[in-house]
Each structure stands twice: as C-alpha cells, then as structure tokens.
Length: 196
Image 1 (cartoon, rainbow, N blue to C red):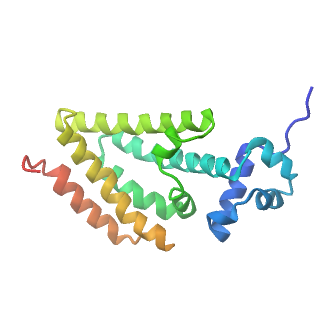
Image 2 (image 1 turned 180 degrees about the horizontal axis):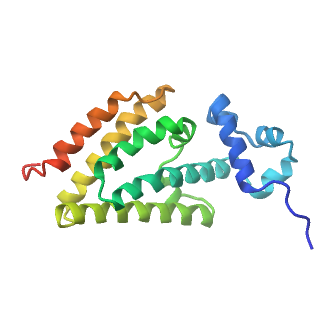
Image 3 (image 1 turned 180 degrees about the vertical axis):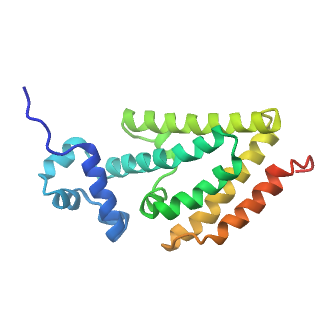
C-alpha cells in the first residue's frame, strides 16, 4: 500500500491563489508553490506537470465557483441577480476574479490540454449554455437567436465588460456599476421591446 499524499490538489491550488494575491499570476510558479507549502517540488509536479496546467485548474475552480451562483439565479428566473452576480462575486473574490483573466473558456475546451482539463471546461461551458438557453426560453418563450442574444448581452456581456475593466487595472469594481448593469438589464430584458 502506497503512502498517503501529504498535500492534495486543493492545497496546491490554494497556495497558488495566495501567491497570485501577493504578486500576480506570474508569482504562482511551481517552485514558489512548493516553498509556500513546504512541500517537495516533485509533489507539485506529480499533481500538476506544468505551471500552465496548474493555472488552468485554478481557472476552472474559479469559474466553477462563479458559475454556481450565476446559474442558481438563472434557475430562479432572477435575471437581474444573475447579471449583478458578476460584479458582486468579483468584489467578494477579487483574486479569483483576477485568475479569470488568465484564460478563455474556448482555449481550455479545444486547446492542447490534458483530457481532464478539456472535459471539465466543456462541462462548465455546457452548463452555462444550457442555463442561458433555459432562461431565454422561460423569459421570451423561445430560444431564437434574438432571445439568446438579448439574454447573453444583458446577463454576460455587459456585466463582464464592465467588471473586467477594473480587474485589468487591479481595482475592485465600484458599486455604481450595479445600477448601470441593472438599467441595461431592464432596457434589454425587462422591457422586452420587440425593436431590440
């Protein structure tokens, strides 16, 4: 029977997140993670063969955390809460928000990544797509291109763009954004103007 691992994948990801908080994404090197945990460098490489894979796993964990609350709001047909989830989540999780700038979902679904990374990214992507389609169907009565476009614009594009600007600058998104996101939500979704 083999020896039980002293450090699990979560320990390495938590250490990487701490290093990102202290010095940015570049600070989360394999050697720095090992030093942070007082772990043999080989134990980090055993679980994460490269820094890129470790950061991809950290990105996936952050997306999963974010997406949980977003999809929960969609499931309740609370589109406004879903739209406001982005700036609120980033305010509560600014380091994870910074991690989300490292990759795009499409890169991990189709890139040259281990199967486990691609599969998890694809699962998260499917969950998001299904949530958006279900919300559009229940809100507009269909999943026509226009309904999906309105839903995506109001619930994803606007909140993401508004929030990303502050993340790139290393700042916390101001609460004033919430009101602008809310106004956009009601203009696009709430009014259901057929001219949109």
